[in-house]
Image (cartoon, rainbow over all chains, first blue to last red; front, side, top):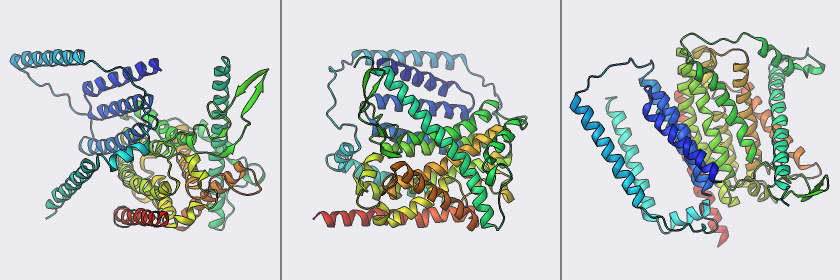
Length: 165
Length: 345
């Protein structure tokens, strides 16, 4: 089990890095899909089957398809390599900031003491228990989220329609 | 007990191999069946020269495809161009792992070379490769991935028609996936489980199509759109897009695309059988026979529709989806919920 976790974690890290380092946005998007799969595998190892399936359906199956759709519509050709001139100050500032952030992150991760692992209660990660929690304890946040999404949809319609006039 | 693991692994592998072999044979003969049925619908015979009744036609087709010229268009993205057919075909095969084709195919324990093997461990005695507790979601997850093959194939071909075909398909798939998911919620409410085995078992007394007629119709429409079959085969309509995303594909790469396409039809039929038609259950005949009969009846329906209906326009497709299917799906869920609550009181 542990070996599978390390393999998946390695795939997730490498593909995540490749998302950032690719020049072409389409390739970044494809590596992001690989990353989603590795993370879904880690969810499966944690017995969160429902979350793993939803991760694939929503992120890999729907959101990334839309991303690809947009990338293909906007950017049909290989982007020309444009050499951007950077000031020395920009470079030094960027590197300093990056190193500082990494140090901060490492410090934060090292400080966290995880409580000893407990066995998950039976049925956790199951669709039924998630549904129960969503519709009892977390009903208000759940409904607020749905209203938020509705607002986003209305906003998208307004933005799309205003151009037609 | 210690020596069980290798035996279980080997037996699981054999089981997967068997299911896959049967599935691939079914794909080959679905193609023949389609050509035959379409032939009779159009008052002609269809292929009948190779072997008795044209039964060896799939073999001849495969050999022909293998020996055709393998062509990669200049300016194409080579890696993605080769990867695209594979990405289409593999997600078409993967859902089979969760679809139950029989109740129990082997006894609980088996003695192999003196070892007593407990077959209940990995569900080896069951008529399903893996009874996942989120089986239905798994099937949908795999189904939602198949769109990548067409989209990437269309993009990698470096051809306008291919690209347009790929773009059309991604819009179509993303929309109709929602209706596919919503149309089965009624079944989930009745069965109370996402496991496909439990859903089949819940239909012991009555098939769910009797309680969910609207759900079944909506599911079939969405499945037609997901498989990009007529009347929703806008991605490969000859008079606008040559052959859609497949335009630049030849030889076995085209063959693998076709395998994926027919694999999707078979999986959609098998899934509809499992969800609405009682799966493997039926009198007299063995479970596997019932499962095959029901599945192929639905495959025949797919072909029948292709021989009968004209193609939609793209705006009609989107209108049908968002203005008709979506409200009907929600109404179906609402009424199912109300009736279940009413009966529980």
